[in-house]
Length: 247
Image 1: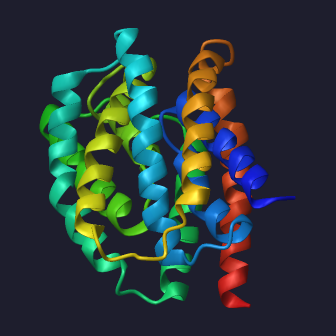
Image 2: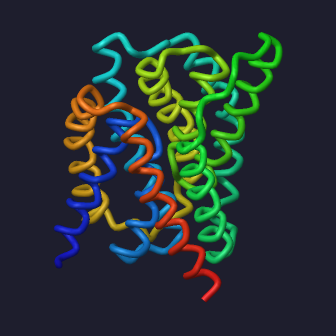
């Protein structure tokens, strides 16, 4: 199968998941770039940030049009992650490939397990605010270091900690992803000269188009069903990457 077709197919899958779930889908972008399209771990994480940013902007517009973005809450949540995203983005290029791959596999596994867990009980306001700040900072660090959107952290925090409805949390998580991804990209500017735009461009284009279909898909299938299906796929990818590092 040609590189162009692989890029288009992979981009479509990531776009569908990102549009439907508001997060988690971008976790597949990096392994797809590494194992299907031959990117190094460092270049894959930078390319992943480009793809995630462009796709999330598109999906954010679709959700905002339907009134499913809490702009003030999302902006405050994103602000907690800007500095961690920038610092982690600057540090990512100095880490060995095996360390980046292993870290990514662990984060992917945690994302899958988080999707399979039920939402937590209501908590006091002070605890909720502290957890929201911690989740925002953690999300920024994960985005900057590994080139993923981190919606798997944002959506549960926005629902369980800040009390947003699921559809609103999905839309708001995209705002958070865009802000953190841009911060991480700024930190990486000029550090990676191995980016293959002839692959990144069609990958991104397919993801953007598919994100609109993902948004429509989310209105037809329950979010819980989508999350469970995607979680098992993500666990398989995480296991494959970890075996690859160990082997």
